[in-house]
Structure formats: structure tokens, C-alpha cells
Amino acid sequence: EVQLVESGGGLVKPGGSLRLSCAASGFTFSNAWLSWVRQAPGKGLEWVGRIKRETDGGTTNYAAPVKGRFSISRDDSKSTVYLQMNSLKTEDTAVYYCWRLRYYDSSGYLYPADYWGQGTLVTVSS
Amino acid sequence: QTVVTQEPSLTVSPGGTVTLTCASSTGTVTSDYYPNWFQQKPGQAPRALIYSTNKRHSWTPARFSASLLGGRAALTLSGVQPEDEADYYCLLYYGGAQGDWVFGGGTKLTVL
Image (cartoon, rainbow over all chains, first blue to last red; front, side, top):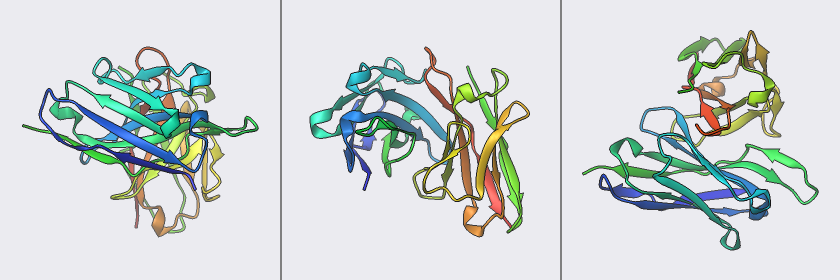
């Protein structure tokens, strides 16, 4: 069973930093592209960024509101993807979801945009 | 800044049919935008329904179908069930320096 479990959320002051983790299981993590999506209280979904698998370059890309402040990394040995959030603002308050953007199985078959984690809440407030 | 627009709310009767649409501020939505659709119920994480314009995931009920319609991406629910009441989000791919993907603002579907 595919599972994505986020952790690391909490209360942080404006200007502070926080690192979120997303631990994956049930699939070969190194074959996946992962993405982070957030949802402010009572609002819609917002794409935050993604990281490709290492064999595709391991490159990252980010939405404009977080570019230069957030960074995504991965540790394939731990089947975990991270979201490092710096210079946090009150408008970054949201539930942050981990999302399997793309997955290649052992035969190369592509599974696009399927599983989501349950999310972790980040509150930025003084 | 790219904006993806959906109907804020729609109401449908049980057993009825409803179409949700997804428009791009950049112009006509094509298959090159790889439209995705997601369902989200209160207090739950989003659930993927449709990818690459019109492909259902293995768990997506057949009453959900998707297409390109009048320059927009569209999600049609046929034979609506009470459990289909939820928020629905579309997602379009843009790539480039502004970021890969942009979500629509969501449609709140009421089954009444």
C-alpha cells in the first residue's frame, strides 16, 4: 500500500524556519517525482514545488510566492522528501501536503499524479 | 501571473449530470496542459480523479469523465451520488520559471 506521511509542522514566528518531512512507503521511492502542495485555512490548493528523481536530474522548481525561501530535497536512502521553509511569513500558514507527482515502476510504466499524504499544519504567527 | 478559473459553486440533484470547467488566463486549454482533476471532502486530503485530460485513475468511478470543451478543461459527473458533494480542483501544467503547475480556485459542488 502506498503511503505518504508528512511531519514537522507546528507554530513558528514570522521570519523563522521550519523543515517538513514526507516519509514514503509501499513503492520504490527513488523512481518517484514528489511535489508539495499547500492549503491555507478555508482556501484552495496551491502548488508549492517539486523534485524530480535523481535519474531525471533531481531538479527542483517552485511557485513564485516561495521561490528563494523554500527548498525541496530528497534522501532516497530514507525514502523521504523534505521541504525547508525559511523567512516564513504569516501568509505561509497552511496545511502542507506531500503528493506523488509521477512514478515509474520497474518496467518503466508511468503512473502520473496519484497519491497524497494527509498533510501537516504550519502556523506562522507571532 | 497565470490564473486558472473554475466556477465557485454548482448545485446538482441526485442522479443528475453536471459539468465543471477550468479556464486558463493564457488562453485555450489543450492537452499540452495535462489537465488533472481532484476531489476534496471536508477535513480530508485531496484525492486524484483524472490525469492527462481524460484518464481515470483505477479508483475513479466511471460516472466521472473529463474532456476539453470550448477551450477549457471539463469534468462531467453523470448520475451524481450524494457522496459526490465535495470541492473539486483542476490543475494545469505551465512549466517554466513561474512554476510547473497552477491549481484552479476550486468548485464547491452541492448535491441537493
